[in-house]
Length: 250
Length: 250
Image (cartoon, each protein chain N blue to C red):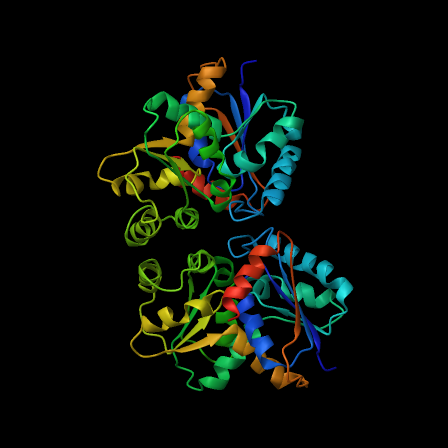
């Protein structure tokens, strides 16, 4: 199966940072983006409710006859993915496994210091650390940087608020990371400020880049030489989603 | 009717700042607090979805035979209150009208500069300004300070993050306020930092204090000389709500 018509699911607008890479690849004919904006954010909610909402997203995608669904949300990838994969009639791909693979491809040194950033729910799941430890990377540290999400949603990508927030969280990490996993699809928009905090130019793992690397690895992709048809859908008003898309997809 | 058994509704934990005043009054026998934590926050969502969620909260309260329901959320008070009042079999009281009344009682000068802080939804509703203007207070200014909510939820009540956020928002207000309406039930927890931004010690209007003032004005209240029985309920896990209650209700 060559995936041409794909879905992208996120709790809200964060997945647009992943959508950007999917669009730019020109490997897809049609992309349907669905944000559960009536119940966003997921990252502050319980495991059970995240799993329930993730399964309900499949009902939304049911009429579209997708070739493949991308879960462009780390929180859903941590708690809802297995349940979705068990019932969806097409492959469902999360962002965590691709992130791990991208890190493995970039860093062979198993002693590398890896800082994982994410929502409360993603960090509490401990999934990144578990998977990295299983691959032999033992020097991992998970940090819930909850305020990064509303800061991005507020359209703030640099400046005093962001810098003081980064300093507040990063003082909890007692080392200098060789790599930082941006374990939330909002975080690539803060990449410069995050990277600049450390003097050693750490490698940043970005879910959107990782997912394209993963798809090229495991699927045959068609080259359309043109951008795909995109539909934005949301459980609340779609306006705000389109506004953010216009801002982020430049 | 003397309200003895009352409900308190909020999208999440913010209403606990109002609950505190209700508890301390010792005027109630039993309080049932319900937070729609599975869908929190409301303040970033559309008018239609806020109204729908507000009406659904009445289903939760239906079995309790309440004497009165307090909507301890400015966003619901702005968009859902009228619809709730139209169908509930008991009085439903929001926080906006009491806030206006508290301001009227405290400030007679109709030229007073009034700064209204709230979520995006509350400020977009323009309801505080409309009601104040109708009472003759024409010098009003609404400011959506969206980041205050997640900052409080993160347990940050002072320091560099808050100060830079306050400076970021308040620079949009071209004056020095005589009064600030804390138009979101999270904001009283930031009261000191907010007030300290201005040199003139502006009056702060707090929803919890305003609602007790309103109830004493319009209802006969019994004095129980003891704190009420309290039940915490939530649409997602109730643990986080209880954790915040333990922190806030000190």
